[in-house]
Image 1 (cartoon, one colour):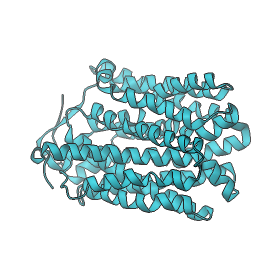
Image 2: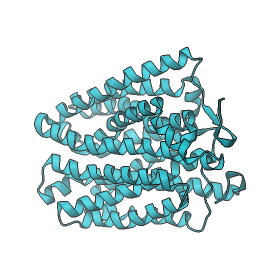
Image 3: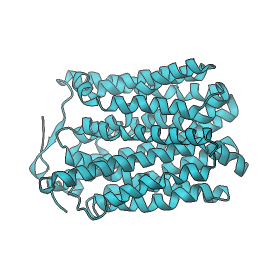
Image 4: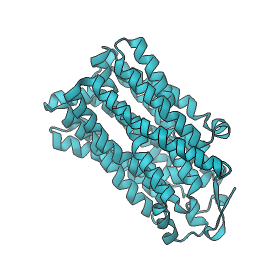
Length: 408
């Protein structure tokens, strides 16, 4: 493997484009699966809780490969992880819409989760390695392609519906095209060593970062931020069809479009309001947005609440990764991957939970219960903000030779 300094500008750009496209593919799988979720549920004749459990296994698959990625990233290379993700996508995507029963559908969803885990486990440390001085900003720009993929996939799904092509096989099959493209982009190119590996930080030092109290707190917060963002998003189509008689997929497309734009401006925002402050404000808006969605009965109210929700969840995932990369650089790919694992584990828990709440309390009651989660985050991030302020403000930690770190 090369170091970053040995990369040509063309190779750097190719890696960046492949990273963005692979993340967009994962997002397209997510939103189109949500769009056809009710069709799959009715075809298989299972409950809302059961289909929530099926969709939740994507989180389990992603969590497993994220854990593997954290250890394999420096051994097999970030490029090989992306190539493995492509193979899993090319198998799991068609299997999802060809599955004849609940068990086989779970297997297909699980396989797509495995693919996304390898994607997250490779592109996050890759971007942190390629842009060591701009981690939070560049990770936000990279993760703009998650909502970007949601927009593309959502519009495609709704457009096909309107054109009379509502067959799930057509909707899901189209995702194979960008999956093939990112597979081609990562073929025949040598990826660099991770930042941690290039700096000579020992494996033991890397693993010890995972038991640092500060990291453990952020790990817990990631469970809650991911549940707040991705849980309601997967249920958006079904819930808003019931409460507002409108397309939840189009609302999710609208939310994603806002997020795509806002993540590109994360750099200037992070300079004005430090990342912890951003996360605290995000939690406030997330709570308000979810409560608004829970009482929405008309499309105009749903879109207004969705706007607030989008502002709230926009910066959660990439900023959480950025804070860990900036505060615990010795952890390298391991701690970044653990954060992604936390996010996926939370999905495994929250998706069937929302389905259960919906069965018991209806769609409004389910969203109101989810809105409690960001309230805890407001308190935690508020305390963290005050703690950093007392210590002189939030400052990234710079990784130097032999793993010694100093405040920037």
